[in-house]
Amino acid sequence: MKWMVISALFFSTTAIAGNIQDFFNKHKKLEDNYLVKREIINRATSNAALDAVLSGHDAEYGDVLFKKHGDKYAHLALQQIVSDCGFAFADNGASLSSLRKDDCQLVKSESN
Image 1 (cartoon, rainbow, N blue to C red):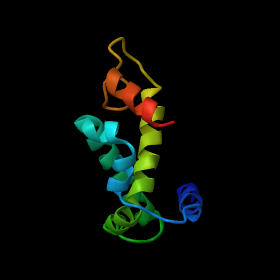
Image 2: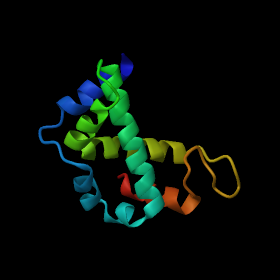
Image 3: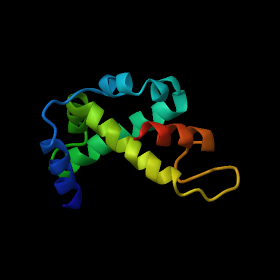
Image 4: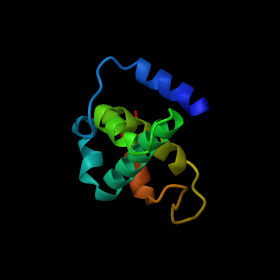
């Protein structure tokens, strides 16, 4: 229920939706980093599938949501990665995300 409310608020404040490429056009540095780009896409598609299931659809409906609102799902994924990067638990910079310390710094710099 919580996710449905968050999703509803998230999408109701969006007048025009864009796709994933629109997001990366605004964040070229993220697109140029393969690991970061893959992490964003993976999380964005997972979030879309979760929204689909929580709204009573099959997970495949997440593909429709992702195509319609890919930029918003990517932005949400970016915020999740920033949050996960904030929980470093090793000297080498490993964190809850699968990204390295320098990748996390890039993500944080692009999230503002």
